[in-house]
Image 1 (spheres, rainbow, N blue to C red):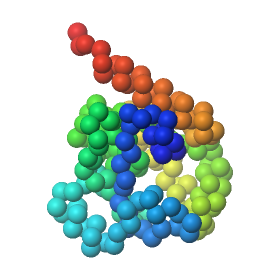
Image 2: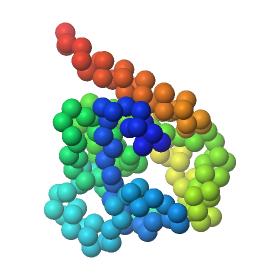
Image 3: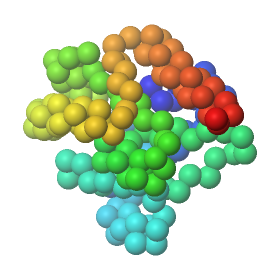
Length: 169
């Protein structure tokens, strides 16, 4: 989804997250920077992450972004990371994607090769994450049909840009 949004809006730059989890079978090796625990921890201790979190036994982190000039940064992060970003930038635009239903989410997770235990854990986390996202003021987008959801996300971003360009009172 995030790559598609960036492909459509050339003013966006997608940050590439790090993770300590192994690549899934068939996963594109550009999906993440895959690292071991010691490498991740050294980077974290050195202040190299904008945000980081542990989720279901693995760590994920966003390196301090270095986008090309004139581009807005798009982060693909979870609610824990969004909370850290919001604390550092109260004006950050937060968009939270949800599957159309728990059954559809489970089918998507299984389709990418996740184990039944992981699927169950992920579904259990979904309701809590949605509540947390709403408390953070995130706009919720249902990821039901790719083109429709991408269009909705781009409209939210365009609205935020227009609001930021208006002079303050």
